[in-house]
Image (cartoon, rainbow, N blue to C red):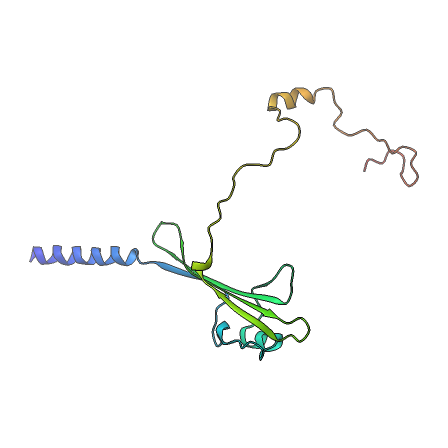
Length: 162
């Protein structure tokens, strides 16, 4: 009897531990509910029909407002680990600037992306860095308020410190 209780408790704790480690998925970006960006027809659809089917784009091109992007991604996280991107889809729809007809539809996935190595170095600035002691000693004898160089300038009131 005792073995059965211990076995049942161990099985329950094992199931609870396994359930706690199941991944949690988060969805962000454009979510196709009724229409799919792949359903957009080249030469048939216009900006208004695409907006009616898919809604507003996630973003437009920086240099050409006739290129719309619909983006989404799915991340999964297990327990305390960092989230990992499981899927990413980007649909780029280019329109003719004169007729507003769809010229091309390109679909990109996570496989099409490239990893970019960021440079963590800082941009050098002119001058030198001074210590806190140099800052404190350097301010001794200096006035807190800047000198009023605008005395006698038309439009200023005497003694005005703006």
